[in-house]
Amino acid sequence: MKNSIGAYPRVRVQDDGRQVVSQAGSVLLVETVCKTGLDQAISRALAPWRKPRAVHDPGKILLDVALSLALGGDCLADVAMLRAEPAVFGPVASDPTVSRLIDTLAASGEKALQAVRSARAEVRNRVWSLAGRHAPDTDGQVTVDLDGVLVIAHSDKEDAAATWKKTYGHHPLTAFVDHGPGGTGEPVAALLRPGNAGSNTAADHITTARLALAQLPKHYRRGRQTLIRTDSAGGTREFVSWLARRGRWLSYSVGMTVTGQIHAHVLKTPTQAWTPAVGTDGSVRDGAWVAELTGGLLDGWPKGMRLIVRKERPHPGAQLRITDADGMRITCFATNTPDRPIADLELRHRLRARAEDRIRAARATGLRNLPLHSTAQNKVWLEIVQTALDLLAWMPMLALTGRARLWEPRRLRFRLFTAAGQLVTTGRRRILRLARHWPWTSEITAALERLALLPNPG
Image (cartoon, rainbow, N blue to C red):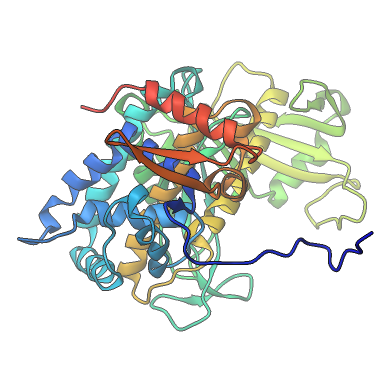
């Protein structure tokens, strides 16, 4: 009987493996790029920045960086993992070429940024059409969540400043389209701001909302079918008035700060005016109630605005605030949606917390830090991060089913993208053979089959 000498098997390593492909599962992202036409759209958009006799296309370079972020990279140099697999990703530019392109686009300012945004908007329209019943507008409404995110800087970078959380860095304002309970979400705007930018700056919220609306199909850029949700940072008179302006007519669900006047009205609200809150499954939520406040509180605000307040028993260990009442945690939001029970409206607003999941995914896909020095360069970086997140949202929406559509970037990488394979050339065809013992090989092959059934762009 032989005794084990360790917890793991001993293997002998050699470096003469032939036609072995690392990150073989990333063909899912490559196929998504091809089927959505993202490569063609960005190539056309960045054609003005292609120099005569240039070997590498600027659109391909930008997409390669986005793919490296989707696979877990966090800086420009991580494009090297694509360069090591030309059989999957094709020719990849050198690090100096990538850096020169970023500098060139940064020097062009808003013109280059708008070119990339226009390409993404064009492809988004096609992706939603291809997704059918899995598209985020399948019920005739699109929900856009606005939220700020703190990005820590560990070195002196342009516009880095002290943040309200006593850290140092930047404070971008982001927007994501919510895919609902059956999916994740995709980015539609990211406004780079200094670290000391205010949380409730109405002008920044308006700018971010404009960028987000420009990414949506044209018939969703105005009208009640588009819902804008924010936390209390968006609860300013100027921003709410902009959302409800005549001709724009957007729906909104905006968190509001509990002021002294609101607090006084809550204390005066009779018991019979409170309605039990509901959970996501439609059942009554124990220890939580909602009520609608009326009267002078709405003076000066847009016509049709409803002010809904929620009170809830605090969780064990939670510390009450000065704005809480009678031992209850008080929160408030405003909406212009009529003729719906206030409990349903409160649940809809509470689901805005899904934006935190999108921010967590963004941090894991290049937003953990801004790796470049100048603000102009980091604006280009934000567009690349959004492109990577688009791919990580579009691929599951088009190719995955069931619970797999809810997988966040880290799980997609560990289970699908990191699968190894062997590239075999036979009969003038290249075949990528995946490991049969890998538990998620069937997920990869089934997803590739679904992508293959989609019509080619053009």
